[in-house]
Image (cartoon, helix red, strand yellow):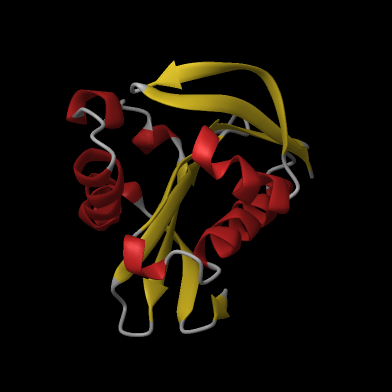
Length: 143
């Protein structure tokens, strides 16, 4: 999917892991202070991966989808936030999930991102909890 100077595509963890890791390292580890051992949970080879790239092919965002319908590890580099990259990643995850017969997406959303997820059709539920010392709530969306 191409839009507004960037595109979103599926990615192969085995051959593109460094590109995926570069975004998550910048956003989660460097910017948000997540410990590397918390970020690299070993589940990536089991998930479908998505990448967002700018017009020159530079990776600017990423997300993953588990076989159980969990959207996770969604990250957009700071200079591309607010330009539709996150929404395009969610849209791509929804299309991918539908194609796999997944009827409901779930995610653990950072509290500061609840408004973003609400705008993408997700509803928050359950109590607030800490993940990597960051407040979260569970969100879901029927697709």
